[in-house]
Image (tube, rainbow, N blue to C red; front, side, top):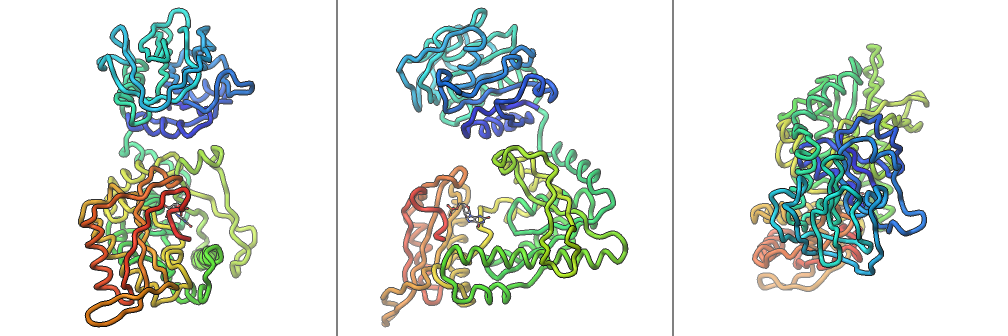
Length: 517
Ligand code: XMP
């Protein structure tokens, strides 16, 4: 792999993704990694990420000095660039001249291996207070900016490279080219990591783990569980059973997409559990958002575990009970929870009727090394329907947290209908890829006066909440074209019973969350 050394900001994940976009496999490691640990991973290249600190701060994150002596091609970015400069005998100065945001740099001397073939003047994305004032001995200076005489340096001989700007950020005009030059030319790493390889590798790995055992997977209708299950099915076929809980809080057509489209594309064996009544009974009269969430979560676990227990009991008879559980854990979850050793076992709850208390499932997590866009690509290669692969995020508690007020069947029907109209019109207008998601919310306890035909109405408002986002941590409201909004509003007020008003949520996150509850 290429190791991306994380100096403590969000940059490392972005760098790891960009490296993979250059068809090279990457892994994130903490900056506390030792040279011996690096050597043991046998990396073909190293990228030192940016970070929020100054190399002058006491206790600022450092790097084992031995790492740069290993002879592994290394690229330092921003803070990583300054760490390199300091360790290799260059100088970093507190010039008091901050550069933040779009910054012009001038490439000098043809740019060397790293910046070869790039325009002399270009815009880059910078975010730094300190500057490298002198390159280490034997290093060539490749670029400069107003505030920084040394904005990039290189030693082809030692295979060490650095840039002050952030090539992983799209605002850096030729950023991806910098990474590709480093990976393919300077480090000589072939561009051979792709979805096809991942599938082959994972299928082999899953077969090895599961052997002839039986395995279960909960499908949510979302991308991750769908792709994880498809991979496991590819590997072990009918040793896998999928379970889909219909809790009655799904959107229009979602159950059919799983039961028909997905099953047809993959051939998985699927059990659907009809739990609408159970969920709606448990939710009756509840209006507090957190209480709703807890109830839905609790009922979900109950239902799923019952299905597990049934399956285990059924298969135990032939001496080969279900031992494995598939989870659609993604790489960002792994990184954010501290890396994980990959050997987690989850203990089944002891409220499951008839199960021994110590029953454990071994987890199968075929997406642990992957980012979301890679998961989608693998799903496509496995032939999954686009409605599933391209799905926007949808919360686990479903429409239950998009009805403001208590949840019942009638309200769900109103919201489901309005949501279907909004989604259909957004798709028709070709906007699916330019929005992150668009929750549609029913204000079930609010009524307003309207007029329709010759009569006065007293109906509910529907809220449209279109948002743009990179990762759902922050978001902005999407400026949808007025004609699309008009069309959605017209159709919803005309076609959906009891709705006489459509309003647009124009709040960013923060302060608003994406969902209303
Ligand atoms: P908020 O409302 O916190 O949502 O800004 C951020 C993102 O998370 C989704 N979301 C959930 N996803 N289970 C999920 O799987 C949940 O309980 C849940 N709540 C919110 C939300 O749709 C948005 O994409």
